[in-house]
Length: 224
Image (cartoon, rainbow, N blue to C red):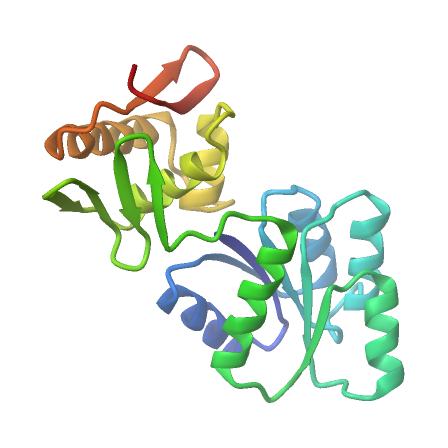
């Protein structure tokens, strides 16, 4: 899952980044409203954590302009502004949830999970596809009595493929979702990790195929 953090207080932004990293989420951080709008308009994020009091454009403006441009990414406003009128304004401008500072990391993670479920994202814990099982809690791929551990990027790519089983997932989408918006990763990185995943599917004797669609991307195909 890819999350955008918009917070102008650098120490808090770093703390938020670490909290998300510990939960194995990918995150980008920006510190002002102009960058927040530019990144948010890309449409690649599963969630935006948005402060209100940020330079150039405040969080209310950013939320309003994202919704005006048909961006439906869930927005969690995380702010020190705790009055009822502030909360009402935030929700009316397009926020999906409103959380005040200081906050408990456990509550933040719970709200993130709730918001992404509302969006309809596949929230994986234990998932079966064709002839294999995937446990997202332990990043374990298994079939019958055979199992193998996936590293972080292998697991994230598999989650992305599993979340769109009937859709071709492009290399560009894999790069932005798994490596990040500003990453220098390229097609070769994606191809390498797809190769690793194929080997691990083969190791557990799965007949599921990660099909390469020329000039388009990849999708999972069930065994015949």
